[in-house]
Image (tube, rainbow, N blue to C red):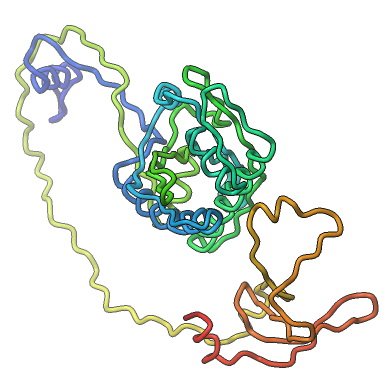
Length: 361
């Protein structure tokens, strides 16, 4: 030691004693592991998807004309191999790809027997769920439409929560059997599984899963909950080697340097500038304007029977004003006109703020 500084041998000796005596010393290499889902994030995701699946249950119940809901929602972190080993009977994977605000594949896993029950309600049939049974074209189309409506509700709920648009791709169905290798279209080995019990009145109450990549789940949580990425320190290597002969460290000598506490400058309270009220700042914000001619509701059976030349009757009378929507909100009514070769709409009535409140209720 010189000038009050410990030598390397003295440092090694002190480290040796700190980890259990002079016999051994642990040298631990660590790394920062980016990924995984923390317990807090799992709790946040459970809450987020519990709310999202409320509208999903309403959609399925409306299609089947029965009460339907998702219960006991919880989030789990699994390896892909665990998904395959946990499937003990024939199942269906309904997959779709999301783009824009959320980018990645989402998979909905449900037993094959339950998909037949749902399809049969729509088609008015009764099919015995045998292990060797396969989807008929009508059953496949019916269940695909159910999943299209479910994912549409799913993406709409996410869009409302995120405040950003999400594009949903088409739905594809895949049959899997116990022991088969499962291809979920996810490259990562670690995945997020949102598990719940799907209860359809008088039909089924069984477990379903919504599988997604960890990155997608984390993006959803961060955008909605405002979470910050948490990094976990993980021990990856432990080396044990003989320690150097311990030395008695010398006590550093006083150097005559006087140490004083740091003095920080005192700042007064800051004043916050009032927010600008100039509406011109918002004039360049784009908004979607939609003119709605009318609406109607149809059973999936009726939708599947639509073809070229089919006529759909709407809920508006001929000559009745059409609705003018801005970002999905009713703001005015008008009448359809023709401008040159294009359709247009002439505003005939502006919806007052009080009327908008009534419509929201």
